[in-house]
Length: 85
Image (cartoon, rainbow, N blue to C red):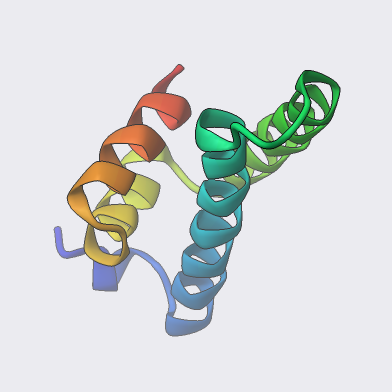
């Protein structure tokens, strides 16, 4: 089934926004060499909360299908690993 048929346009926009916010925060955890460990731990906690909220509303396959369309290959790989943990 096409992802477009599973969610409304508004829901898709919300999922896209959530994916971008989660990935942006995840990026800082994974690659933020200039960020202290205490701050990384705080960001990691926020990202886990964002992940849980998104997974309560939508199934993982829908989220990953949309993520694959809006993230580049490297970003998607990191996002998929995080979301599948």
